[in-house]
Length: 467
Image (cartoon, rainbow, N blue to C red; front, side):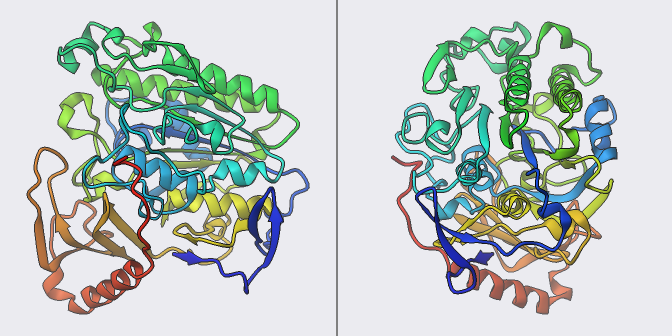
């Protein structure tokens, strides 16, 4: 956790926001006269084990595999929450969702009848970069409020094209998902497709939505060429309902789920190719990751966490540890990164890379991980907090993870409080099979103190998901 105090940095007024100028990094990468572009490709419910380079035996992902071979493949990369809305809030703000009111015990995500959203006073990556002259575009699933003042265009994005919440919402047929997917009945989900604040298609034809998101991203790359830009491409797949275009129907040995992943892989290839064709590849950092782990309830339509335990909705590793690839040819040395990082680290890292000011009036839960990206120093992150809604269920410190509370991901309110907490050495036991709490009471005491200190920084705010 980072607390930025005004007495440590020079405070300025930028774009109407109280900001803090971060000291310039010594690395030449942060001093470039030509500011880097950024693209975040954020999938929905993709599991740790769903990509070839992460070990899937039957899903072919040649573009993602090549992206990993040319960039950084993270093996210990986490999200801020195991479900959609809070995870997206964490990514875009660099803050745990408990700080913005974007998590709830009663409603785990926003729904079409929700009236809340990401509060206007929250500063997103887009808003911060825009204050430094960046063009910004949001494409795909938003899920941070479908009414103004919560839309992407209210939060620093110049444009928006996508669906405002999960693609299984606004369901108008009682037929089960598997039948609807097999029969390609996208009309069963009356979810809207929006451009900026207007609905342009309803129901959205989800059979072609991955292709259309890809085309929109490539158009933005061409439009923005010559000036710095940030594109946030948040696919609404492979979240159920599963749909894919005709070109990817029955192409995967892994069934319809594999078809969907292979089309997303195609999309990644198209975007990277567009950057190369436009001469932008060596000045663009592309990050590929997922909002949480696989939705195991949906069996073969729900993906895989590989060797990790658990999935979406829970606080075992499969719920919050996700695949993550950083690609920046000519700048990042290709390698596997085993150090810890999170989606919340992206915000302060982007700010450091662009010498963009950081807000001075709030707590950040992300760290600048440029020392990890460029191998110039130690990793500033050594702790992960595993939130389930508004509570911390587990904490990781270094190799060790302590579970204070466990609960099934879905379909049960029954929880187990562990005293002493379960303790796993994640380096030796990433599948969380062997409890070593009896061997390391000193580790448990240290983690308990870390949790106590963290909780002392949490200030109650209005809950947005219960409005």
